[in-house]
Image (cartoon, rainbow, N blue to C red; front, side, top):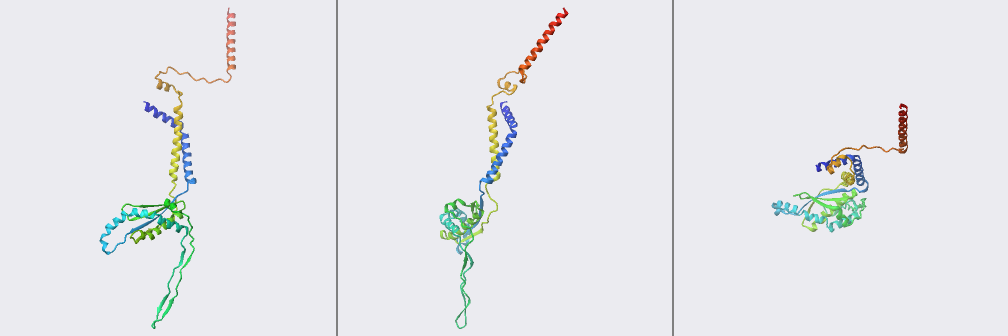
Amino acid sequence: MNNVLELRQLWDIIRKYFFMLVLMAIIGGAVGFGIAKFFIAPTYTASTSMLVNRTTDNAQVTANLSDQQADVQIINTYKNLVTSSNVLGDVSNTLKKPDRIVVQKYQPAVFDTLADGTRRLVTPEQKEVTRASSQKKYNLTVDDLKKMVSISNQQNSQVFAINVKSNDPKQAALVANTVADSFRDKIGHFMKINNVSIIDSAKTPDSPVGPNKKLFTLAGLVILGGLTFLIALVRELSDTTVKSPDEVTELFGMTNLGVIGHIKAMKHFDVAYMQAENRSTGNHSRSRVSRLNRE
């Protein structure tokens, strides 16, 4: 019986404060959405995929399967190398001073040997022509890059991905590609590997991956709505007044013998009392006169 009563009380509280609960929940959802939309910077993720194979010769062709298994197991080593200070330091320097763009590659002079043994110039030497890069410079330290870069891979796969998170989508893509290039250039110095392939280069992401506006909205709705319900519940439970005869019967086991009706207070009680008194006195006087007349 008590459990039924408690559930009924909860239902009564919900019914009593229903509109307030709905209103506060809507306000909480709006606040959560506003925080995610206007107060938290969006986060973008760019990824590049890489495949690394160890150097093998003809005598080791039959061991390809075991080599592939070893490559899968060594992925964790690649993860540590990618996020090492050696690789990320090179990335930091490249981002601070972007390489010049090669407009024309160097071409050596081409000579033709005549029948008499003399050499005749066919194509003159072409020097390398470069121009300054239009790439934006980023002053990122190694510690900054370590916070931005993460490595992921699927189970039993030789392919791993370099993921970069940033508030700037262009920066995320640039850092991911620069890390991949630096790792490809330096892996040969660390291990006997010369077969490094970039499968997918990072592209500038169009949409952010965070913050999750739906999650923030739901959290605001639940938190403020739940807090409002908790306040209403505490308020109702702290109210010890008896609100109905049924509560007296439930609490004390007493039988309800009757109910005293509620009489509204009169604004001009003194005037009404005097009028009633005068009417009573007048009626009494008329009664005495009528008795005397009958006698």
